[in-house]
Length: 278
Length: 157
Ligand SMILES: Cc1cc2nc3c(=O)[nH]c(=O)nc-3n(C[C@H](O)[C@H](O)[C@H](O)COP(=O)(O)OP(=O)(O)OC[C@H]3O[C@@H](n4cnc5c(N)ncnc54)[C@H](O)[C@@H]3O)c2cc1C
Ligand code: FES
Ligand code: FES
Image (cartoon, rainbow over all chains, first blue to last red):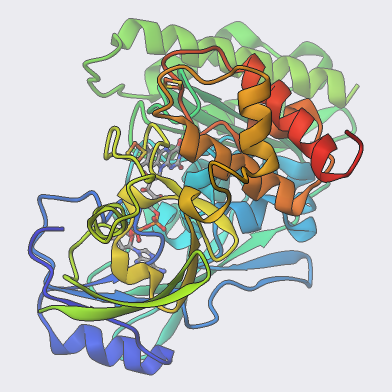
């Protein structure tokens, strides 16, 4: 962060917004794990949002609300988080980076921008989570995760306050991250959720990232709906899956490898679904 | 514009003049805490690990200003040559140090675990040490040493 000339500690939310609005080149800082290392950045004023009480994790009304500055460790060790999606959110937290990084990385910092390598966006997508955001005028809005990511994350001055995760324990949930070491960039992150009634899939969510920006694969979701658990047509699903993602370039690994990887992880998730909902 | 960082380091209150863009790692080394090592400087290796407000963190991937009003423990604060911390002693007894570059960070990660969980399983130990890379040794000896230190701290050894 070569250009930073001011680091400020607002005492409340409204002061944070004022400080941001005052200066054209402001940024909020939470865990700092991305910002501290950022060298191509014109930010001059940093506004610390970790002292505003935005890290609460609250259980209620069929959803768990997680404050934006809760760290991944706080989430991972929270009993409320274990209740979300039969533990899928906890698993996603466990697979993020390593212990000292999880102690610093925050929920808000993980989902504010479209970093394709990060772990939480796909699980926000398969849980139909909602991102609660405050704009510079102090207005709050609740944005469905799918819209939040499709629109490119936060806009200038938007402050993520919390994420509302539906508990959704009646669904099947699965999450996988493929990387060579714990803190290395992932090659593929994938989350899958399905609602099963009377032996049939009645609703589904499938989201991937890294091979593309975090996104739901709606064509596969639609192809899953109506399938009988005992007779899922995996081969035709794999064909839909292949044609539904445009895999981006990655100098570390070929597109062919990641296409194969995607198919294998998806197939395993389907097998798990069949075993668990038998 | 310089600012004053108010921070407690190893129990001592300090006021340190810092630049708002300075990394915590660089500030700690500048004021003499050379046990905080600079390895990769991109958050990957863990040699710069310290304990801040009760959590092990990588000081190369955070700004010093983030530590305002915080409490920091570095390797200098947990033991001396004559009176080593039980984890330091266990690392020596188990012979799990070669070049030593990774060791301060690894010991602080281990301390952070044992402060919270005095009787960890092997799995919990490797999870707590997963951010500390060692280029010289394997990790099994160090995991064994943390187990031995836990027993010593619990008074079972
Ligand atoms: C070596 C390494 C390995 C990593 N591995 C992984 C991994 O495996 N999986 C993973 O998920 N992540 C991983 N990360 C973390 C990831 O790359 C980001 O650094 C992290 O998610 C940023 O979170 P933060 O809280 O530190 O954000 P900061 O660095 O503080 O901020 C990042 C961005 O988010 C904005 N921001 C933060 N909070 C808010 C908010 N509440 N409202 C609006 N904007 C906000 C900031 O303005 C900034 O633009 C890794 C990081 C490192 C250094
Ligand atoms: S120097 Fe900080 S993680 Fe390598
Ligand atoms: S002892 Fe040399 S890096 Fe660990």
